[in-house]
Length: 113
Length: 117
Image (cartoon, rainbow over all chains, first blue to last red; front, side, top):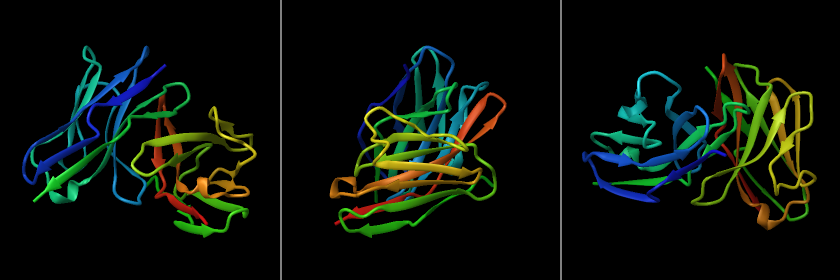
């Protein structure tokens, strides 16, 4: 069975500082990995995805993530955060057979001025 | 492209009434849609997979008679919460699946906030 663990429930960071949101997954088959952002009372917006190929994936809003198969990780990074990045971030793995998404518990990114 | 809408965005109802939530894929056809439930400060919980022209597949622990799903067309799935109670109050999010080759991607609606008084 597949599972996703987001290691930090909350990450406070000052504006313009770098940030890393951690995600580890468990799967016995090839995986597709995703990061989504959710602003209050809104649906999910795709930040980036890893399907295959280059392990460094660049997404929207200056975010990037690195797929590390040996460590089964897919950590999200941004070199300089803005106040507007304050939101909930979800890591997810896709079941290749059903297309179902398995979500992590979420990480609240709090950007302080 | 790949826009999914939900209606209504917010609904308040009395206990015992039924509420219908619509999920539409606006610019593509989706044979499969998913319904999620999200409690405050928590992750998304998959409730069911909605398949066009056939019965929905419910996740373990989800009451299919409580949460009726109808996927009558390739662009519309509906979730009806029957005989709603305060514990059904939650944020409901749908998604529509697009399959490109061997890859599946889900596009999410903006969510519906249900409050049962």
